[in-house]
Length: 202
Image 1 (tube, one colour):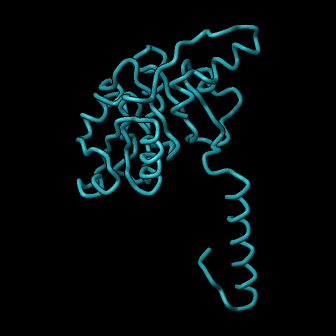
Image 2: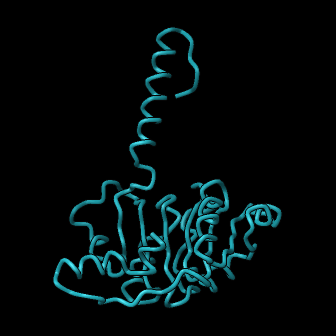
């Protein structure tokens, strides 16, 4: 999603289908600042991917330590610095009351006007009303969202028409391989319970 935003891949592909050619000017990932909210397993994996593209990576969360950042090889910054200096911000936090609407009007106002926000984590972490306002007014360049307060998103939801918002239908974890593991483990657990030998909690 970060690469799609940086190079306007969706808009460019749509333009090609409509007869256009090179309608959007992209930006390089190399040298840009990636801010990661949450440096757990998924946040750490993203950091490793971003290094391949030569991005400068910084991270913050309420429980994040400098030691963890050093382990992953990224810079530790405070929350305000992350919002103010990142070209791309990607959310990788577990949902709790502490992070509900962690990204709201105040945080969006800190972001650079050419910055992008990505959320593949949990929908309530972002105040979606504040985000739609920020996008509609050009306060930030764009956002990419894969998770929503209501799923599936209603066909007539105004969110679908929000400018500069790339929406995907919660497909971050949906792959053939992941589904095979998920359903395979479920069947294995059910069979074990029927046999009176549960192997894992459901």
